[in-house]
Length: 222
Image 1 (tube, rainbow, N blue to C red):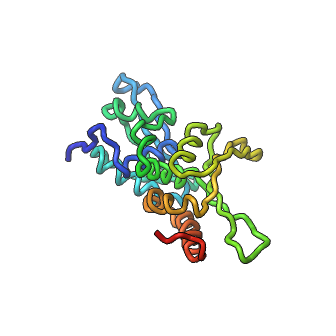
Image 2 (tube, rainbow, N blue to C red):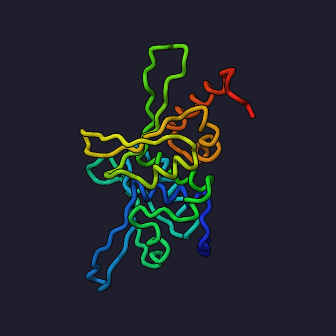
Image 3 (cartoon, rainbow, N blue to C red):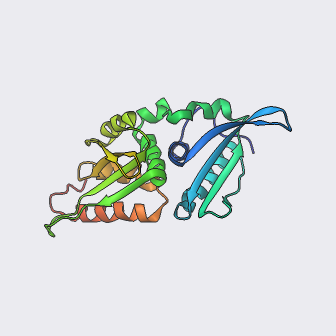
């Protein structure tokens, strides 16, 4: 099989890049035996995220003809995908350091898939308690990072027509990029992000909200 990547990003690859930007990374090390620098792609996940790593592995094979194994980390409750990417580095370096490709920034369907990769990797969907049982509890999507993701904030606001704010998690010293699911953006989320999510507990919360909001008389069923 030949590598299918031709400088054009599809939705699967956009998701793949989102996962790299959440739970993956690149690193270099000196191979003393082969006497050269090796560049590696590595992805660490917990047990709940195995479905994400299976999709990641599938895309890596379909797009780049690279077959990898998902291995359990000894004495830990985590799993790892690791592979050398020296030949692929001319492509992958364009996604290093959380660089979002211009094509993903411009196209809502690609950005939605990219966002799904971030949500599956570092995202949480929280349900806020509501004292009024007659209203739908607020659902907020939070994407954790070690810094404020200012570019991501702008892109979510652009493609999903909603406000985004940062939240400082003092316990983990992380920053959450947060936005609410609402009747204004649920259609775009269901169209461009929901189909690409693979972690069922996250999908289910979005699905539940969608069903409740669509049942309201003030929701325009277009």
